[in-house]
Image 1 (tube, helix red, strand yellow):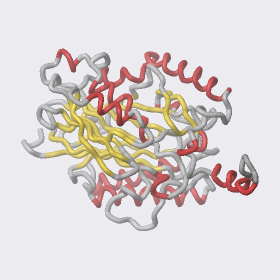
Image 2: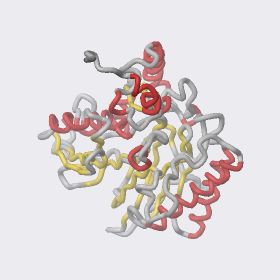
Image 3: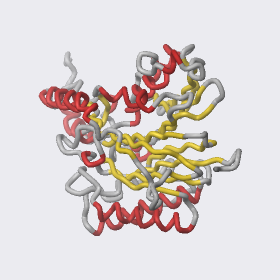
Amino acid sequence: MLPVGRRTTISVIKCDVGSLAGHHVVPKIILNVAEKNMKGAKKRGLINSYYVFNVGDDIELLMVHEKGERNAEIHGLAWETFREAAEKAKKLKLYGAGQDLLKEAFTGTVSGLGPGVAEMEIEERESDPIIILAADKAATGIFNLPLFKIFADPMNTAGLVIDPTMIGGFKFEVIDLVEDKKVILKCPEEMYELVALIGSVHRYVISRVWRAEDNMICASISTTSLTKIAGKYVGKDDPVAIIRAQHGLPAVGEILTPFMHSYLTAGWMRGSHWGPVMPVSLRDAKCTVFDGPPRMIALGLQISDGKIAGDDEGEPMIVDLFDDPAFELARRECLDYTAMLRRMGEFEPSRLSAEYMEYSAITRVMDRIKSKFKPLLEK
């Protein structure tokens, strides 16, 4: 077992480096680049274990190590991996090669350079179940609703009522993406204030959650805004989240329950539409209809002695949690919502409202006809 006080860090870093046949899926030849680099880093002792996967056109690197959050070596490993994968994608003329690599120089962290990052440094408990959530064709605020349900809604999470270690509630860090500020709100006391903020999913996003009783870290969410970094639309943020479960925290089943039903996220086609979230298995984490619908995956794992618990051959044991008919209702709802929204075409609210389209190509369309506008009452 780990010595008392020794800490383990879980890092999930994602990036769109290029996709096969449009914004569809990361081909195996690109995933192999990441697998090679992760294997080498493990052999050198930089990371203890890893898992490489994709959601739609995004490569996702799950790394477990002892370097702490925002570590330059870990972030440098991810940055160089994404750059190498992007070069391979460019040679193959894959679509959107290097799309999320918005800056040239690595600055010690990938934060602010394009890739999305969720990290959590923990002191291991006797048993530490971890859920990884990752989305494609979605804006950062996609996790606001489920995180509220998981950590603040007793109708979703029974533990808020019947578990004495949870009844004190949870604290939420909320980021203001417009003014680069943050606030911490405690539930249940400030539940209404929390909803008032996070209901505005374009501007306010949950970034971290702690248990109020002892400030134990419970959830970490990426908050990268690609549009803000680039100053123009270059792709959706496609966020990732890490959530701890059980033993005085929401149970795995309580974490997954919000995804029994579909709900809407900004993103989808050209990052300019509301789209229904579809919880899917890894094999279905590919985007087709109108470059979607927006996909969400959920992976389950255990942290054990500084690494992902593995089998007898040392391979990490990962559970594909949405590979389950229990989520068929959400998938059917998603398709119903997809058909309804597409019948609306380019009319709001299917398309995002004008204030959220300012970085998209539609501004160039409007510029072409701007001079044709005349006053209603000409003199």
